[in-house]
Each structure stands twice: as structure tokens, then as C-alpha cells.
Length: 316
Image (cartoon, rainbow, N blue to C red; front, side):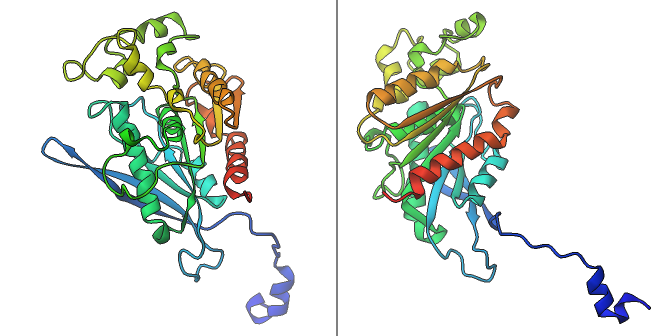
């Protein structure tokens, strides 16, 4: 007899699954304009993508509660800022209960380091100004970045309250953050070549190298010169220069085999944070290089989530 005519027999042959809910439903909002910048007679629209945790009940209104936010800053050598990068890590953060904003920012052909930092701070202010719309707790915001984004993440976190980096919209909102994650970013450009292979270290002395252009601009539009020629400007471009009592807790990572950004860069920042009594933890990942497959492994994102949970979700 066909099972469709015998429901009891069909039920007896079925297998039942019984499990706890572990993964959050998510949704994505793309290409939200968070700032506008003048660019050759037009407006440069800066955009972000949002990953939003949803309630377990899909019929519940969105949002139902406020949650901490993480501003993710992609790398790209300061020549590109593809906000679609690091998707597995961002999905994991959102599933862990964070509103995750992945941002683009202006590049070396447009601005120097200060303009990029100003863009990051604009994104933070935008999220606070629209916290109710996106279900964000404005008192719990973190920055996280890798490579160039690690540098900008560290800069945004250490320069809280510095008016020179506040530009654009929503200036009534704060741009300080409550936690920072820096994956293999630069921190002290005066020592950018230390610990690297000789050809790489020598290349960083060229007036056309990325760290030099980051500080002194593209000749002939910037002042030019090497980093050694411009010590004051170079010092002003170092995230560790701005560490203060306002600096939030840091989590730092670096690959043991990184031949592009020396592991010494996050070590310098780690030591400077400790000297200022800023809570900081640093991990060196064995065999890992720069932005390679090691950074997609669950051991990394699990440590990041644990740090963020401790810093942003634990009672004060």
C-alpha cells in the first residue's frame, strides 16, 4: 500500500532531527551611502554594507533589540578598498550577534592617511546617527581591520577625540570606539622596514613607495620626500602616536612569516599600549603570511569573537 494512504507507516519511516539553535538568521543591506566627499567637481559617495542579525522568529519586527556594532575596514595596500572582502569572518561576527558594517574609504590617489582616518570616523558617526534604524547600541562600537585596514583600525581607535580627523556629516556624533582588532597592520612608519627582507625594506625608502605616499602624497601633488626627510609628518601618521587614556582595549594578530608588513609593527603597537596601561592581547600565528588562508580559519575568528564578547557584551 502506498505510504500516502498510510500516514502511520510514513511517520514510522521518517527520521526526526532535534537540535538547539546555534546560527542566527541574517540579512544584508548593501551600498548604503555613509558620507560624501568632493572629488574633481563632483561628489565621491562612500558606501558601506551591513550584516544584521535577525530575531529567531522571522515574523518579529526588525530590529527588536540593540546590538553591538563592528566596523570592518578591508585592506588593499591603500590602493583598493573592496568592502566585499572577509565575508566568512563578517558572517561569523554577525551570527555571533554583531551588526557588521564593512566600509569603503578613499585611496592614495585621493587623500593621504588623514583623509582615510576621517572616512573611518565618518562611518562610525553615521552608524551612531542611525543606530535606532539598524538596531545598534551606540555605546558599544568596535573597529576591526586587516593590513591597510588594520592600520586604519588602530588609528581610529587611538585617535578618539582628535578634532583634526573629524570631517563631513554627523559631527554631533562621537567617533570613539570601545574595542579594536588589528590584523597585521602598520603602526610606526619610521620603522617600516625593520625585520623585512632587504629588497622590501629598501623599497620602502623610495619616494614612490606606499608608506611614503601615505604620508607625503603623490608627487607633485604632495610635499614629497622620504619618511626620513619628514620626521614630524611621519610621526603624525603613526597610530601609536595618539595612544592615551581614552584608547580602548586592543586585540592584535600577525603572521610569523609576513614578508610585507613586519610582525614588529604590531609588536611596537602592543608594547606602546602596554606602556600606557591599555589592555592589549597579541597573537603571532605560526606559518602565516600576509592576508593568506590562515586568516580565514575558525581559530582566528573564534578569538576575535571571544575578545569582542568580553569587551562589548560583559557588564561594566
